[in-house]
Image (cartoon, rainbow, N blue to C red):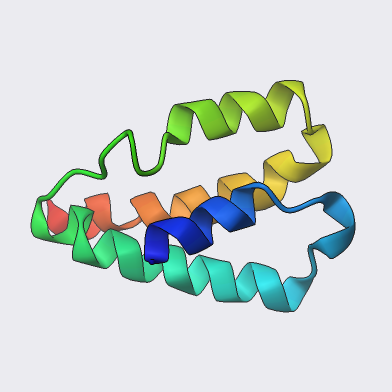
Length: 83
């Protein structure tokens, strides 16, 4: 369910993004990172393809790049905690 919600976040349009939604999705990404990366389990590429999301944001939706990067950073923040 968490993967589906995060995929919905990455497919939102610019008009539907606000600070409250961004905060909620950052929290959700942090939680997912804690459950996966924080325990040494990888995030499967067929669930969330981080590279594709970043490239797509950069090339097709440049206004979505900053919010998407902030959500992905929260997800990957658990790498520091895991080490």
